[in-house]
Image (cartoon, rainbow, N blue to C red; front, top):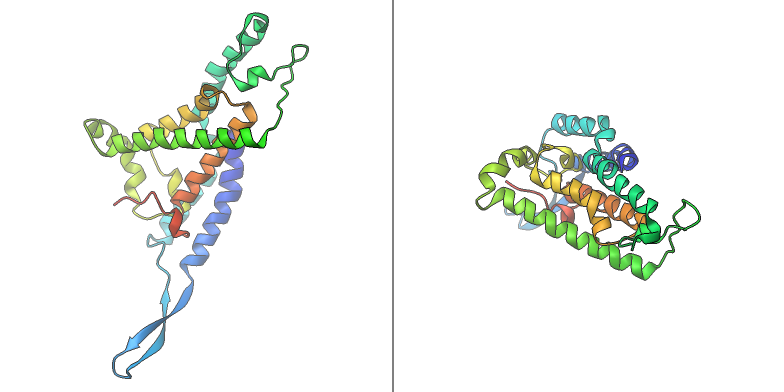
Length: 231
């Protein structure tokens, strides 16, 4: 998960940021009605999909790129301090252990290597289930930060994320690490694959695919993905 942070922040984010800046300067031709002439005429307008100043966008972009090691840090710490000891204990007693997780089921009894058989149908079902559960959990956390009795406590940690009122890819990284939604994201990344019993490689794909999905949801150059805008 840490290594993927370098890929996402140094490659994917770099490309998304470049596309955004290019589209922000594009001109396009539209037809407007000329009342005096009584006909349509061409007029050129500047695309305003990214109304924030370029200085702010560049600052958020540089901050995201300067902290790739911070990517999913909490999830990695939880994995090392909680799941790894559990796996070591389970492996030490595997002769008397009934596996409940995909990766434990895949261990060869005579070696320390994990063998995972790929099944496309099973893989697709597990990814869809994982995405559904993550969206459900994080959607509920987001709602609790905006509405209900917990808003007074939770929104102060969530407010920084909404300090930007426009969508662009670097917005994903603008936030408070104590944001309830951000914290639950890390909990899901660390424990959800294990909880629903999927193997380690499917879990890695699920976590990183959802992370990229969040980047696209915050990007400002594809309107259909502009889902995170809030006034």
